[in-house]
Length: 225
Length: 225
Image 1: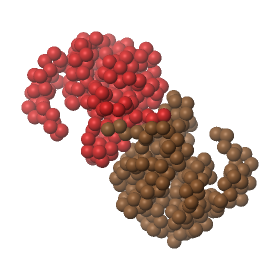
Image 2: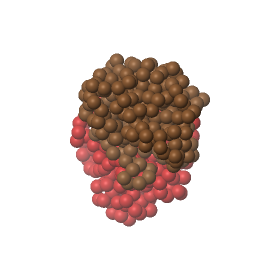
Image 3: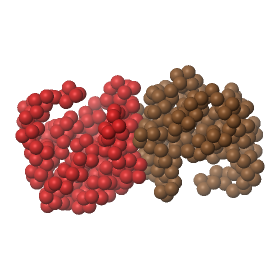
Image 4: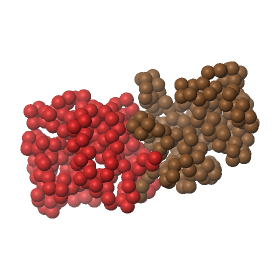
């Protein structure tokens, strides 16, 4: 299958790599291809610049958001929040209409300093906002409640843990559930329509607190019954 | 030990009963004692009116918020949210100064219909708001992330699951950790200062969604490492 992953950061790279390992064609989308490739410095977490990463992941393509969308059947939002709204507005509608967008981002707001708060919250969510602004895309929210390595490979923890899924289109959700299962997620918990993205996005603050307390991002929530 | 539990609903009753079972003196606080006792109808969840409940729990006292505070060393907020701010304002400062307030409530906002949203959220929380308004009380936030029966008796689930704790006063937190352990909670997770109450209060929306999906309130989160 053909996937466009929006976002060149660690989340985008990790998901792109996992999809590629599983045999899918993957294009990472970016605003400006030459600017992305020209960067020579890594990020503040010690991750290498994109060009260096790409040398070791040469089967993954890099293209503009628009070209990546045009050549792909499925879209993944791995940007840091609401920038996806502008990105989608700038793409010719014909290249995205009818496609599934898997939204794995959180609406991060760094304007109050660290840790980030949420720019959309409580009675709205990023997932809903994308769906409302682009009614011809099928938005499925998932994977936004854990670290990128665990998103892509849940078996990295020895015990079972959970992933949630929200969306208005049943067939799109079924597609995403099967994709998650191919990653190693056994039973994704379907929370209902896209409004339930509020609940999973609002996990971000406690996730950040636990990251600080546990001193590792390698943890996740399990719903114990 | 002497506890005042603010709130006559199921959360207040369940916690009061558990404390009493464990040998503590418990007074439930209410706005108007005679009005509380005069009610003859149960709530919308099928719980009996307070007077009927009290017949079977006769060792638990009922008093005004003020009298309950005056005769108790420890206070518990089991009201439905921000009403605690008015309640505390109406009590003579001398009756609450220096005391520990265990805040197990969430700032529920029913003004947008069901399910409730939060009236304080994202860059603030109910826990912080109480601490800010009443700097001479030691606020400890905990137990606000699961059903009342599980708060009081975590062993009702067969697998281990987690409770979180937030607060600025280390001794007050240690007291609450030991109280939680007496309830059956093995290792409460200390999230840090009272600002970390934001994280646990923001779990409410996904809790409500899971309650709807799982069709039972008998579940809780475990942090899998």
